Image (tube, rainbow, N blue to C red):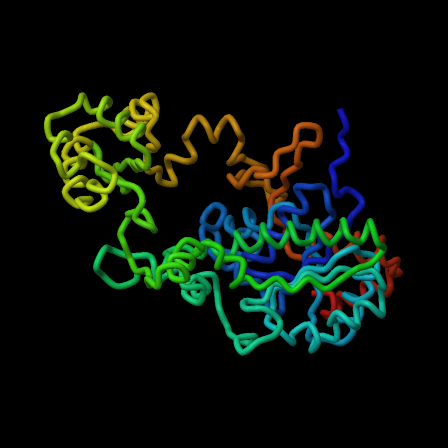
Length: 406
């Protein structure tokens, strides 16, 4: 069995921050790349300020959110406000294969680290930029976080209760989604360089990546002229009934049920014991069920309410119905499926505490990923500056004392 992972020997300098940037590095590290995050105590990454903190003690090296998001990334500390620090970053990039950044357009140029400058230093370098809305166009300088990205893409306009206004997504899921897309873009660019010897600047618009989620509504508008709006949990194109979540026995326990074909409807009727109400004219066909979906959902909710969510999901699955319990975060950590796949793992942090972070979502049979907790600030400084760049001990200590390396 080969132990060499696909990207071993590849080095990535990661200037990303918050959530999208680290997920690029995390994914590439799962594949074996040596990823070095460039950060500074002068401007601490926002992710390092987020609770919960290990043992309840706040600190930039104790944020469990940071350790999970930045898993697999190393860290070098450079105060990029200083010209010497920017020069060191450039020198480090000459020993790398790719660079990641998710700043707004123009920031890398202000650091004198724009693509043309990087190309002068290393001809075949790959720069992956993940701006909110792309590197050009009327929205190029728009400021967003993951939450506002879902508004910009139209996604928030589709989320909410039927007949009501939009309810924006609570979680900034756009960030990790863009990070995984971005990692794929870097892998493609690395493969292109292997085949041609050419580096490139990848302009990955997070907005355009996330916009794929509104594809059905977009096509409905193009083909039918309908502007979609919030529909609660109904199918976005109105082609399935039932299609919602239904309360079950216990506190805040729910099950999702979706039926799209007549075979699935027959399976649902069998699972329910074929009660008399399912034979009503208003439920006799898929078209009729969709037209009377509120009445159908009300009937189904009466049936699910006294039942256990997991047991009911298993029953429905046996009858060919797409059903699943609505798991909360506590359920995820205890779920036997996720335990078997090591979706969440416990690791030892160098500061001496144990914590639970994400396991590798990239799983390969011959080259399993090695998962390391997110880095302490500057933990790889000695390796980066003394070993990779070959700085003398005296020069290195001088840069540390003057807070160039900081």
